[in-house]
Length: 181
Length: 174
Image (cartoon, rainbow over all chains, first blue to last red; front, side):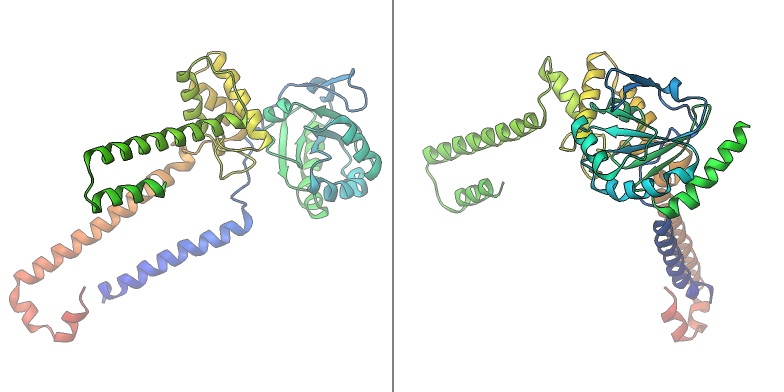
């Protein structure tokens, strides 16, 4: 009796394993690169602003208040989609919005912002892409939530949507603000 | 690569003089050399890095083959044309110039991009199932086979028992 059920049990085990795999892949993107930076200090950098290449902004200049670092580029098509949402709902976040212009010609970036609007409080430009590597950027768009102490709290890969703002960003921002008080 | 095989087959099927065989051998050698040139020139074409010697170039290629391009994830850092891959190749090259070891360079990359950047996942808490899972399944299978075989051997020893069992039951036993 027991040995007769053995093949069925084996089959059920394999079925359960495959079912778990399907369920898991619905909530986890296997292509998403996990960020080892979460819970650690944001990397030190000194980058020129897009507006004035003479003026440099460092990570220390940004410390003291939480901010959302949003990696974007004029060559990035998905960024347009995200841009419209940042234009509409960026203010709703209630924190500083820092644009990180990634491997982009300054003239192209400026034209792009003139065309679609500028939701950012500050834009830093990384033309060589070195600081982006320190942040573990794999492409655009990507966003980092950094708290007042300069610790990276969250990273989101892909365009920000209203659902992401409501479910992922706002609760974390509320928590960060509570923590800093 | 199919052409040399065809030539070899022809050599084997038709009777050939020693001179002809020598000629074909030379042609094959030439073809191989040509292919080798082709491959090395494409490797240089992606982005030429000023290696100081052949050994350094080989070390770089071996290391870059073990690293994943984060943009085109099914390509290694060695053969990806993505801008990020080019940046990372440059960084890896610069660190090699600065005298860093392969392990140090890998640590530098994993601090930014996690173990995802390595094609060979290192053994730690999160990956033990990956490393030992197949071995455990194999051990479980071997255990099951061992138990079944021993049980059958025991059943075979007690011949009176098998004889009294109904035929249908014996058939089902596997």
